[in-house]
Image (cartoon, rainbow, N blue to C red; front, side, top):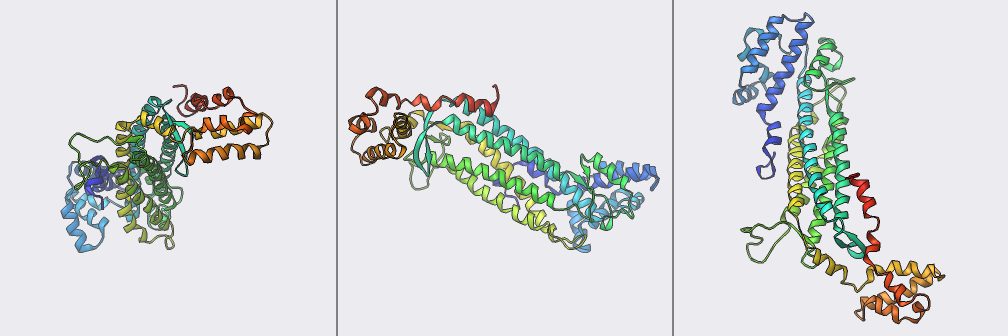
Length: 436
């Protein structure tokens, strides 16, 4: 069940009973139109089904009450629909089975949800691009294993994320296409009681394509891929959220979430400014990923159909899409208002006394004819002294007679130029963002 705290109204509305019953009606009404054109039912009946159903407001409480008695949701809806339409209701659902309505409706909802999620990613991409360009050449330290490695830029960190979410968008588009199918094939999917042309008409009217072969249900490998895609997108959200959480740590404090004037970080400690939004995204990502597994298990059904997948989809359909929609919007807001501290980034770059340039010195020594093993040993022995707090790296290298035999002071100093690390940033940005 979706939670209001982590929901946005437009996505939630897709999964409301009112929306569901309206889609059910549209499927039935479009099918009636096709049957009328084929001469299976009177055209006047199809017209009245549309007119009366379109103007009606479906009574959710009434449908629930009928279902409590008949123990079948589609029959309960059709019973209520007959109360609205009158005698012409006998032509509704002719030759169709419940799964024709349920599965086609679910796919309509998943397509609409995908459209919102794609729009969410677009908003996130816009925020990432703006901030990446803003900090394209803001120096910061790159870390491997959480330890200072070599210099990078904060803009490049955001460019990584942009490229990842550009891939996420492509995956969502593909997932949307794969799940956008319609099945109006009747019991066990043979079209024995309903003409395939009815399915083609409904599919076109609902913005879907026909399911090539259905076994009374639309095959659930399509849905498994859809929810797996949502899980991958959620993992990308968590990756970026985790980066922000680490950067906001007090010992690092290179960037932090925006902290509003009246915001409070702790009930006990008034000084606290915690990365609560990013932590929240980490938790929400876990939930979206968790929905992928039951979707995969839904692929395996008995013979032409069973309903072991039904209860799963009633839960994961709304929950996964609503949660991911909220998470993407929250992440876009975090990036848009992220507070960045270039001075702190520079301070951290300088923290290890120049050790971030060790590889350049290593390469310079090998280019002077020294073996890589010997060069590595000389650089490392000086680097370890810096870790011990003896001095700065450049001074130690200048004082090392073995190093100085190969590299002059001027040559050593040239290898401590920060700009060297950024000479290909433009190339990377063009790959990610194009000529812009």
